[in-house]
Length: 623
Image (cartoon, rainbow, N blue to C red; front, side, top):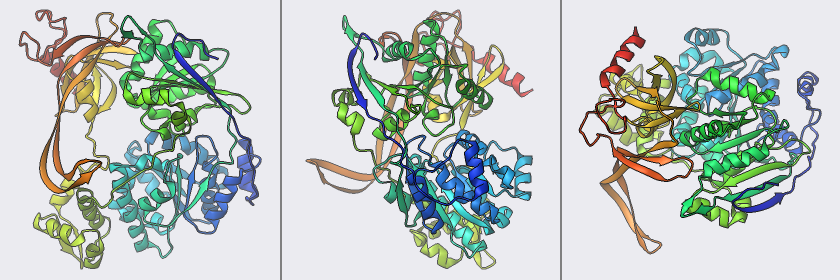
């Protein structure tokens, strides 16, 4: 039981025992599973495997650590032993590499597995194409590339039987709309090389519409398997609301670490989830400044080798706690976890359950702590704990027939394999989009079909299925060293000149953000402070075209095309111990000095930059 100076509510969620099922598994495959300590299969695993063997497309709704992997592992290995191949799609490259080890346990049976993604070296990609594996592990981005070069994978596609899409709840929204079109393109290309139909196995967190969503994502009928038969640890839930003293609310990040002190030690392991890079870094810095040992920061943007080292240290017990973003929300294998702390509501009940699901050792009570921030959503769930603990999970949605998404995929379809006029006209909005592509000089006739022009191929190279910009590489200008990267959209908010940038538990000041060269330069902060920066943003929406409107809930609801601009024009300085604002600063200082930091002549708290220094460093790095 936690003892903290904060408004507190506690609840105990009872655990559940396992229910086992019967399914015949080849002796050699069962031997590999037994080496992992799996003697029997759960009822939902047996049900899922039987449905797959009957030729059904299956979606498994499963919390973390409920044994969902075996539902597709066993059929994929059985197929491999018959000379058939499979594609396994994970949402992140880190998860792909983590799961590769599971597949390689079957290498002794002759099953070959490889990861093929953006981090796979060019020579390795060539070798994989020549020495085809039975299981190809990839992501949607690389599958898009594979399809556009399908002639290189003809032999693989001709023997492809299964497609596994893990964590399908992550494909909601624009990314999922693109992914749905990629899956339909995969089915089309496969039909050119094979007369057999593809079979899909999907896995999802507990969402409101897993069956409907998997069918919408793939365009095929599915059967659902619910992983309710897996064992569950009892969980003690603690909801905390920081106290207010003299009109100032205690920082929720500081309260998270007070809770962490009571949950760590004696071999107990802890995950602290923050909802952003900045939150995670602040928690890590406060831990160091308050001499709380055994806590490390884990997030996207750190170098891959650094992330692997942190995972290994946590598994071995060398590190007691990881402060993490959603990077560890998915099924990464980091060993047993005793407790989780949610520093702020993560946006959905589904994500709450994903994060809480990381905690639990067999036969032991787990701890899950939620710390409410000072915003309406967090306060609502603190005041309504039944909604937090037992609320309906959200549904996932996509719109694969959005015109702006369909157009590049019709062009990609022509690149995958020359498209006949019947296929084009059968494509959603095919006649209209085809007319536009011809008018813009983006497609041409070739051998009785249609293919993209050179102009189109140049455009397609810049296509993003995630609707996000390129990554910005970050350099420590003092050490002249690359330290990590950040997505372009986030870099505008976190790496503007003057920003206090937190990275790996260290404080830096941003010297320059060069979008054209996709680089940012930072320098270690030369003074101690409990301040951090938050961008001041101005967002505006300009109506381009009104497509429709109607009355809704007593107001006017309009639908149409808009142009949204998002400008960072300055920043505020906040104290991470008290969450109070100490200053507001425009991006150009009051003296008018042009974007300078650390300029001793400026006098504006030394928060400005000599631009030439950053340029000189970049030239050195290029040399």
